Image (cartoon, rainbow, N blue to C red; front, side, top):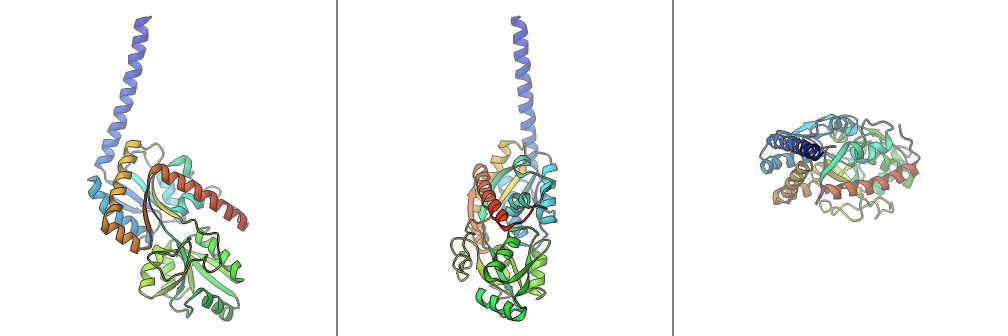
Length: 328
């Protein structure tokens, strides 16, 4: 009987050691890369630019290539589905903002993934603000002037570009229209880059998107940002007022940027990559570039990013419900 128990105990020990060895082997494989960092939007937009800045420095920290993989479509939904299907070996990660991780599951009945069930947060690295920008061919230079221009030129009607359907920018278009008694219709694009192209070509008079998407053309004088979300003005755009300053309160909770992995990814790999992200954003040249793009840089651990996402989801679930929007 004693021999049987010993045998069973040794068998269990060998199984545990075997599993540990497999996990270690998987982590070692992940450390030899290359690592694929997916982005759910086309090249040329703000999220793509941010991913490339980080990837360039992460390869130095990790000692393996970090390659940006643009899987554009459906507001990042295709990239999220690809992450769910990817092996949990730390070789495939997803850099995303709030839209794909938090908002899409609230507005799409069957997005093809469940963020809480299918993904694990790796690290957060910034928050940012959305804002309203006016195209260069539109004479308005402030929110008040834009409202007056729409009332005069379009009898209170205008089309406003947004980078994705059923996104925070689309809900903002609706709220802005209600606030100023305008008939504003959101025009969804497949990412910020094509929306910006139409704004620069004066095909649309205005757009709502993130500060990182707008800031380059804002600084070049090609568009004019007239309001941003948040409880205070953005450091990169101190001249642009917040919506709260203009009387539109309730949008102070800022969206976030983070990196996510497939569920089941070894914790050691998550910790290693997260630590590399912390070191990268602490580099003065990286922090300066991201800040100049309109981000508020700040590291979040895996647990902190998870908590941030949960709080943000709670806020926007209420806003979406109050808007009368029905999941599609």
